[in-house]
Image (cartoon, rainbow, N blue to C red):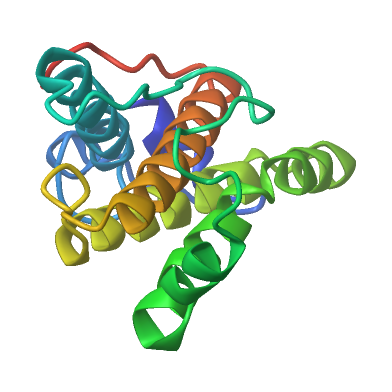
Amino acid sequence: MRYFLLKFTRNSVIAFDFKEALSFEGETGPYCQYAAVRANSIFRKLAANNADGHEVSTGSGSDRVAGFEGNKEAVAKVFEGEAGDEIWSLFMLAGRLDESNAQAATSAEPAVLAKYTFNLAKGFNLFYHRHRIIAEENEIRRAVLIAVANYTRRQLTAALATLGIEVPERM
């Protein structure tokens, strides 16, 4: 319900709709939470499977996913074409959290951050549906997908926390 109220600008007239506020479809808090829960579940599965013996780092941006070092050309190939543009766009969108926070604070409009959070959740859901993150067989591509998913989930969780919205373990 908090997201429902925050997504409107200060000058908006709000007609509260309980059903709309709790929907998992559209620009809602549960939709954003579900994207974060889905991202977290990927990393639970990766930790449980660890089938290929690769370390999966879930820490800060300076951490590395095994397989990047010395493979610049292979990594660059992941970002080629339409699929690569999509991956890069999600990564860049995730990187705009600080900018969105600053804009929301400067304008005194939490709706700016709410809109950013929704767009990031929507971008992640599209990414999730279009790319086989866990089942990807190409080692380098898989490492890139994992790194982008991890960065996005951390940024999405931080955006939700700033809005005062928790990410449950499961939904």
